[in-house]
Image (cartoon, rainbow, N blue to C red; front, side, top):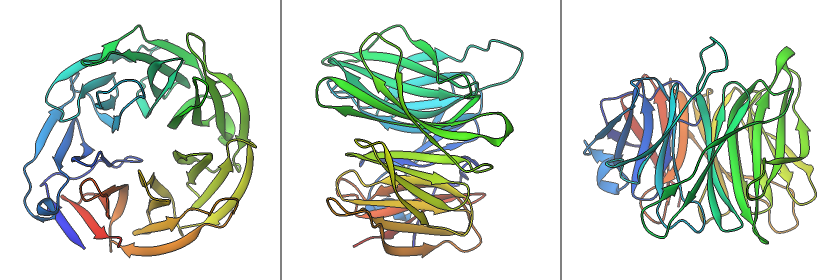
Length: 330
């Protein structure tokens, strides 16, 4: 295991690590920590960029997005008071969406995804009150932001824990929502994204009572979902059916990430293990274990594929640990 010493612990949050092949980022209290994604970062003390939250509120998640038809990649920060857009290196502030509360209860943004519909890019963010924020983004150079719209996920949804999105042929997109409701009820919601309309619910995948979906990722026609039970479930987005259930960890899974180009994904759990898995072959339904890495006595909070453009390493963060861990996958 290699370490990139940052002197800043990752916050105890789901999916608290991201990479875009050039940088690695995670939430630390009221700021975002960014380090270079290179082999030299994991051989000592890398340069650290700190991006404080604009509202001095607690950061809930950080993620890079690049909506199709929008050539500019953006760093998106979700916090307790707003959704903030930055340039990919985190140095230039671009736009802010405030979190509007309908009552006196506190809330936050959590879950970040992007896709396009009819030539318009959209950034989506989930909300702790069960709503989904949709922000149009256009532009051939500097991104231009349209008016954001808040959509209710569905009547029974009282909180969104994560989002995933993908663009489909024909000018539409698909949005997956990890939702929870009263009485311990939870479900995965599938929605079609079309231009100038609210996302349309097309399917609902109920979860086991008492279990929570912490992470969602889409790879082609597959939807991968990680749960508090230690399970990973795989759904076919075309047939809208469950195709595989795997007990991946002994405890709560805090993060799941797919490789940007290879048919692999990684999971990080409270059992102090990072798992690397191979997706099924075309037409298959079997997920295969590639390898496990142990981070002894660590509460893992995030996982990502890093190591520069090739992403041939898997990185992880842990709560109360002031470095980013990495292992080679080849």
